Image (cartoon, rainbow, N blue to C red; front, top):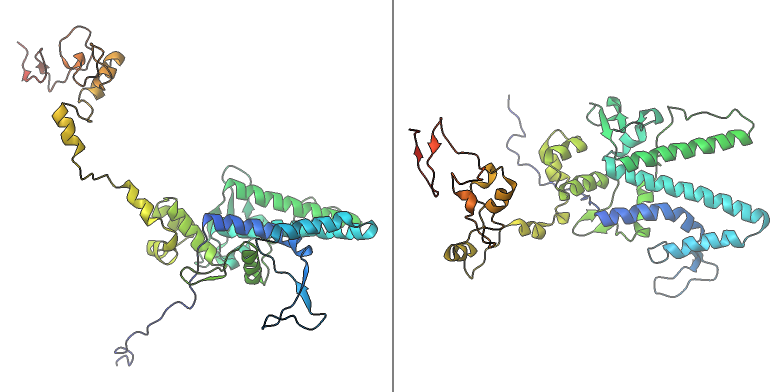
Length: 370
């Protein structure tokens, strides 16, 4: 008849791991490191393993050097140098390994770029097939089927032009590889990719690959203030960068495919990237040495535009109404156009219900004709 847990207080819970959004610069560095790292892996030098006390271990304990931003370019250049210095069959084998490493680097870079620019979850991206990519036309999209989406509603993910071009180039490269393999095996050459093939290969060790790419880009895996770099953090990156760019909340919510706006603007927002100090620059200046408007009133000037400017149809008089020059050549905000009934004045008459204005200097009261 009663809930035995009704009087129990809610347990104090906290996130075990805070996901971290990447800045635009960090995202560029990550994509670049992912593209270059497979080739740089082939050029890593061997180093001796150190002991914990700093002394070297026994003879023969060697390992490959870790890739960092400092040695990434050096290792990459060393891999190409080893290929160029080799001869005969060894050179051919190295050339094939480097060509495959270059393709792998482009696949990895495209994978992170797709995560960052679409907001797709890991399972959602892995479920996409070649047939789900509609890359032709002015509005390319990825069709996410309902059974593969978290909310089970299905969606069309809009693609930016450069991402659609990268995906099309990736599919064309895969087709060329399959045709070359079929030709070497004396099989019929495929005219197109199978529509049931995966659009992008999402490996099982995706997190480990991200951690190594992040280390090569100089990104710390854990940050005490901002959290950890993880695959789902790309959704936080998309939501945060859109907010920093000033995109409205409704648009961000639709791109993130959230049902509640509070989820987009709360849980998926990395407030550390919001420029709160720069936002203060849009506030008005408040000088303490006197109001500039008071000084303008004292000198007979003002920053406000004259009332007759919007209804003046004469180009020459319009310039006068805006205070550019008077008949005497001096700047004035009370030009000749402010006199009604003057010759050459083409200002639209201001009347109410058929009433006409009396001629003379402004301001004037309205009077009935006759």
